[in-house]
Image 1: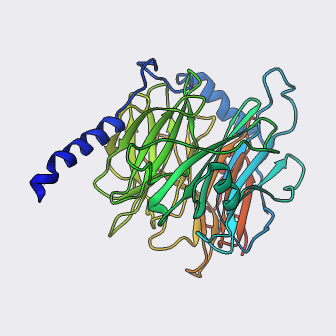
Image 2 (image 1 turned 120 degrees about the horizontal axis):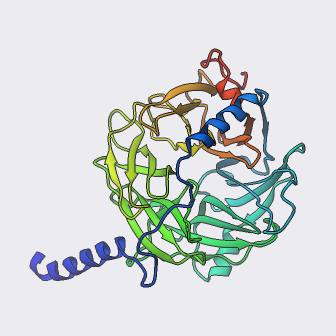
Image 3 (image 1 turned 45 degrees about the horizontal axis):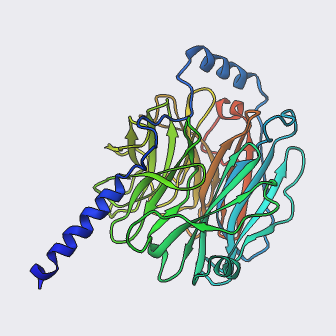
Length: 402
């Protein structure tokens, strides 16, 4: 029986490997991330500017239109080219909500925030029934959204499942040219030659110098691992590479350090002692190399990571074994090699409490924003300055009081 099917299996394996390393004809041979080379003088100036800002921290809750909410994404709505750039910072958040995760009544919701104003009432972005009708296929449930901002345009990537659980997921893409007030009918990304299943999105994308997009995604069917999608501006897959690990990993968070070098922090979904897993690329995402895990506990939970303007890295995660009842901020000044606890955002003695799935963003004014799931009941937004991170004090005192 094995000999009968071996040629077919061999061909299928070869096709998968070919697709995983594919590059579309006509694409750039040497891609580069859209980041400037390291400038020590600019880093020093950024540190000085951060130190001169007032140290502040505040938080608020986003609207709660449903009993359960999870997996928030956050982006800054960028003015169109040529538009006034001194306008207040405007953020757009999206998340999925319903009676519970995976339920048929789960929809994608959005809310916008402007400096000096509260979060606006939540609006529905996508419903399961609407996506099913627009795409002409069965949709069983909706999952993680991801917002990507460009001047004058927003992209929404989100997970949908037609059959089975999250391992049967696919990624869809929709566009908005009016700041998120309306969205185009979604289209499914073709990320796999077989059934186009088991690709999910979670953490922010990375831009390339040529206008294309790098999307950190992950695969859940049989072997859980991180992947990197290189997309054209219109959503076609230019290339795909795997973040191979000896352990099961999920949800890479990627930060470019220079035009070719980027680091990725991954959720540890393996057995035994879990720690933040680590991968790096030196060719702008065409290949990834496993590095030693960071000395940060990870209870199989999502982590967020961004590069700050002073050149340091900031991570939000649950750095405790077993549960998600503590949300902390860690910082690295050596490109991710070592990390220091700088703040605890929320902490609870109740292991059933959950402060999870964080997303970080530093806006164009330098203010840092953190959104995260609060006890699966809603989404919370923390706003703070880099000076607050730098402020000496007791880092184990939660910033949000109990």
